[in-house]
Image (cartoon, rainbow, N blue to C red; front, side):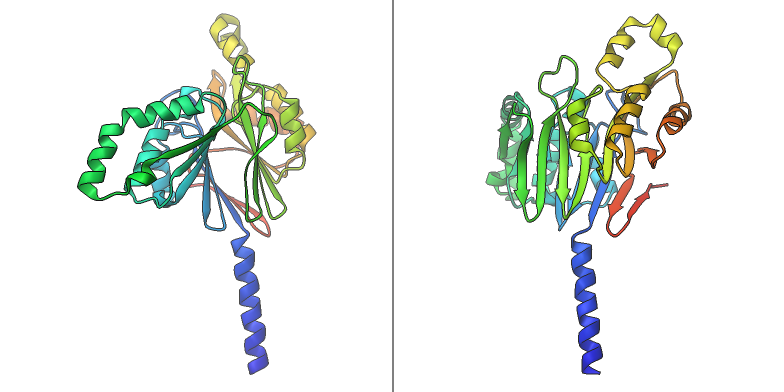
Length: 304
């Protein structure tokens, strides 16, 4: 009996250790600038080992975190791909709400040049709010601080601890000089978040053989492109289906999830059909609150 008990205990411990190494990704927002209830602003959270890492904080990020059952007080690390408004308008809510929900550390914020100015002005704008809440609610004012790091460097490690490594790398977002994608690595697994980008060889270099590639998509009908010159300009700094097919075939990611969905006069089904004709690995359109669990296998589930 004692031997059986020891074996059972060891198996349980091994299972718990395995689960501790698991990674769960939740797409909080899969839209762009357009204000729609179906797709909130761009944001993705990755959880492993009890830690949460948020990439971009678009419109509604805090609401989606609540819907996903993710505790706001655990949100301590936020990484911005770039400073377009649709990627940052939810940051003030996330920063302050997680503090009100008694986050026990200062929030760490990383982004491209301009991030410090943005964060400094946010903190100035909410000075009175922070002062009043500190007086009235007994919150710790120190935890309301934003600790900011910004960089223009390509291929820079922005977080490394407990077998978790996050690397920021440059992508091609047109006139946006400093736009980042992110590589998240833990226990031999690799997750890539493209951020906003047109075709990017640098992204391909980092994303080869990724377990999960979360990549933006933009598509428009020929009729609209022919009649709308502004739309043509917008498409030039995003990834259309033809360019994405090249990216997918060069990276050969195990699973690809499409996000920051911009579709003009063309359906999701049409785009997916075109891509699947050119790429034969698992490929999905992301939706808000979709979850990807990475353990011994990869499981993708969506809220009804």
